[in-house]
Length: 322
Image (cartoon, rainbow, N blue to C red; front, side, top):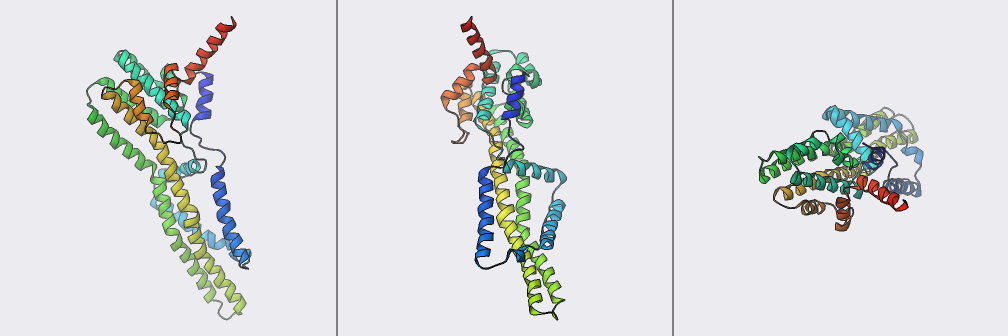
């Protein structure tokens, strides 16, 4: 892979780490400002809310129950999904163009060349000039394997379109089910947090019961501290964990859309469509906000991808100067 391709691969692959999107920060600020501002305006004292041991009980129990309920792989994937949600790491138009361009190039190879020539590209994508021209796809290893596996089935020539479609549907469903495990596990935590808040509150009340012989002011402080547990459980559930889980679901669904694009394009190709028509079936699977126009897709496929277009353009400029 050339240095320019490597640079594009690193800069344009889905961001795993980076600045939290302003919309998320804005939402957090609105939530906290409304909570703190409203409580203060009612005459409440913020020091009353600060009960660190109540938060330790609630968050510790929720973390423990989460680890009990999920395999370690899901726990790790939840951390990854959280970063993806906070950075909104979803495919951009460049990713879609690279995917459509790669599919077009491979379909054209299948139509015009022999099986052995096409199989050489599929068996070793990292050294294939077709794949290296589209580095954002090359960097997405699961998607890369998905594409290679089904092109291998196509060039074998024994599978029927409806059989491939059924197999693709099953695999995509399996992929989505796996990618949605962090969402489901976090929603389980969100549903349990109010109850865990009540547990913390009950422990606080038990503590207050041991101080019945104290002054009303001191006893009221103990009861107020206990009620913070109920508040914290409900707030963390509906104000933080549930929205985060929903954001993870949206991001993971958008990332899985790439597989649907591959599926629709390959099925159209297997049913006799020309490569340019087949990728149009895939283009229609892209959401309106990120969907490239037909003209943009045509210019990408005609030039053979941005990685090939750039050298061609520089050669033309050099010839003009000469």
